[in-house]
Amino acid sequence: MVCSTADGEPLWITQRPGSAAANDIADHLEVIDAAVGTLPEPDAVGHREGDRGSLVERPLVVRIVAAGCSPRLAAKPRDRNIGYAVSARSAAGVQAAISSALGEPGRWHNAPKRAGQRKRRGAQVADLTDLADLSGWPDRTRLIVRREPRHPGAQRSLFPSENFRYWGFLTDQAGDTAQLDKLMRSHADAENAVRRLKHSGLARMPFTDWHANSTWAAMCMTGLMLVGWFQTACLTGALAKAAPKRLRSQLWHLPALVCHSARRVRLRLPEQHPGARALLAIAHPR
Image (cartoon, rainbow, N blue to C red; front, side, top):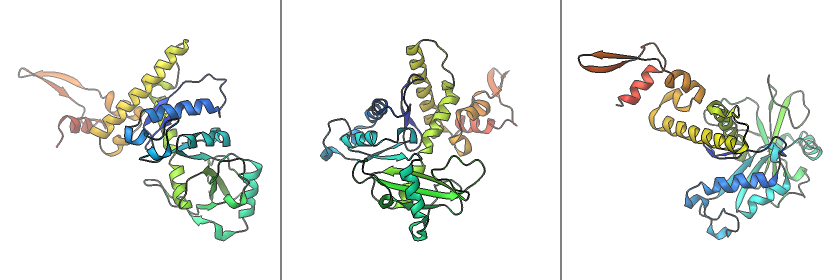
């Protein structure tokens, strides 16, 4: 289980047995509390268990994937003065709300695109809170649903439709529906963090001992954080956001020849290699 920042930087990782339940509340709270503990004091104050709401200097929102879609889990961040946004599961109540909204075209609004992402034409978003039974959820919970024309490779939808793919989430955040949808969709950065962790060694657990594998997972996360800081400080362009797998092939495994000339040791890089210019830019910044 991984917790990351909005830009995909991992904050905390914990290892769980294969038999662990996907929506185990104790596991989620362990990761949330540990992640809050890594934040700077101005960000963390007021968000620890038992803190008063008056202590909060900066609001926090935790985004949870559909595996953690539980009203009991959603109530726990509230005890820490943390807002929540959790991906909705396909359920009878959600499908009934979407079905009712189909006859109200004025309820749907055009959805903005995320920065740096291609906008899907026809994407719309709607607040369906008044059409859904949210009595089991904490007060002020809203159901926001997004729909976009179906495309090849689209994931499973909340609502059976031949024309649209439906996706939604439940949140206690106030504000514009379209902007909240944009905020929630950026939780995909957490999935990118998991993929980057797998590229950094987490794809396989090399030991048979639980504690050794836990240490291995922590080392993978630490290594990924160092890579991220290196990219921020030293790289530009595509390599600044490249996955570790690409960095490994274009930069870290860059072949070079050590030459001795005029009592000097020179490192000769292959001119045609795609990572040669990036390495030279690091060594000789302008």
